[in-house]
Length: 226
Length: 87
Image (cartoon, rainbow over all chains, first blue to last red; front, side, top):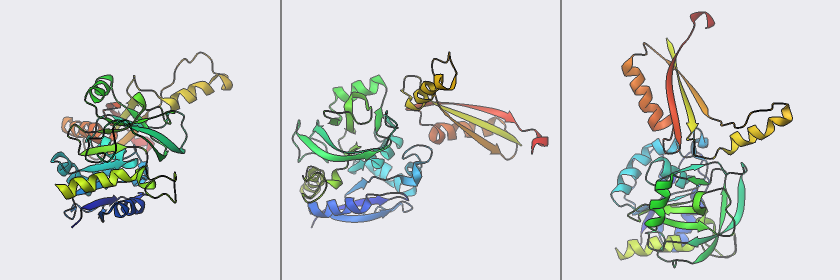
């Protein structure tokens, strides 16, 4: 008996297969979910993966947020379903107001693709328990709209409550406020980040490290021990 | 028949690098004396039937929930009469 983790495919999703593979590498069972389907097939957790859902028209993630599958994801996330948003998935989570703040174009106005150093700031969320707080990791980053913004009150609240989950180290690649790379909701079940842990789960490819794998082993342990 | 225009702008406190890039290009084009440019979006909604209070309220809801993300953007809604001759 292992955990079943859903991966939503929207029109324009790019990393659904990589994300499914990362889930499998971690030892869980990936379940493909479709944007037009309200049914989450009784999965134990959901990953919203990277890409350019619906062409990112209007705003990144803005149209995906109103897709049938998201109605169910939003309801169940509020009830405690673990949800991880990576890149476009993070943008969708902010558009859905499951996470505070918003995502805008990189401050330098260019697409950026690099191996990015991060510090894990919160190792208590559903998706980060296999890290240690303060741990430094390298995972790939690739995006156009990676600039995290929020008003000062929200930033203060995130910082005070330890809800900045990941911070860019050494170089802020997009102008994100407070060097924020990822955040969590207050309950710790909904986490979003711009860099791509699913591209760093095997030593053969990517950064040559498996620094992204703990996302998927963390959630697996949580679900199997639940 | 009327047109309703929804203008969406980034909130004033949010950095607008696109607007800044436009502003920086202006002196090269011979435009002096423009100290700031901010870039926004304009939506033109062609409305069937009268644009009464109820229709405007619905468009306001649409702008608030979808056309703008009020976490990062402000919006305005206004009616623009469409001249029949122009059609």
